[in-house]
Image 1 (tube, rainbow, N blue to C red):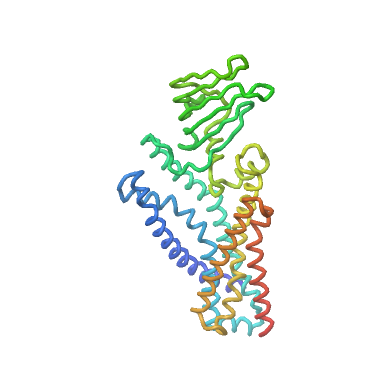
Image 2 (cartoon, rainbow, N blue to C red):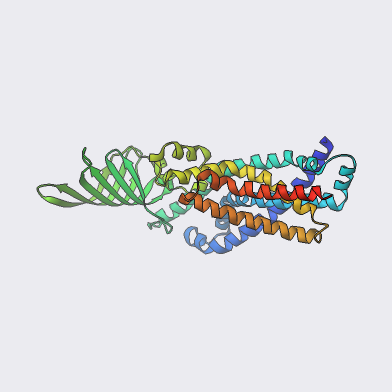
Length: 362
């Protein structure tokens, strides 16, 4: 069995490297063609700029394509064993096809562990580095970010803050509006500022407009060039709030789930991504089970070309289903656990049932 595991591991990892290299290179090229103009506009017309952008995008692309590459590598490995009659020889020696699939487990488990590290540690870090790089360029050009997205709301004691955009890893805020309330919750002051910059001890507001609300005078307006904002909120708070869920680590997602008041998105949104992060490496392992019935039916349904086409179709269908249920989970239409786990369990069940049917007919 050890000899078989080493042999299958060598074949599988070789095919995985080729598949991953091909798919990542293609997607990297398409990504560069789509975003090269914006990258050059922000950072300059240099080959090094494009190379840096490509390197920062690489972990995220690898994380996205790894399950599909595992599916194709498993299919190619099983197809090779089938075409060389090695599976037939193993069955003749008394080994079932299910034990052959178990020989894939050490290599796939190793790849799944690497996949989890990439998705939970490396990809979030490089994604934030890319966002910070873009924010530094926007800040140097004195322009707001081009992709601001929806405004965020955060509470600090009796003060409510509305932020239009967060840049420079949370150290600079655009479009800041502060609503100060009294002990009874009544609005007593509104401060509107173009930007807020973190100085190390507090926040410095610029281009400030103050509206002081009193019962006797109604509202009193005043303008200031700069004004200090004393708050317990730090740049890391804002950076975590606006970070896309794909750039949050498992620890950060867990913090948003266990402390519902810390995020500006609903708790079920973060809970969906928490389950998704845990389910991601499990999905990589289940790809072998999905490839097994396709590989077993290669000789019956037209050879390796048909099998590869079927594998591509299954992979595409998996990603469509995964994206659909993930969107439903983010919207709260279905439970977070169901949104994260159902695609893997569904396709693994289909693959397992198909494999049992094929093996029972032989």
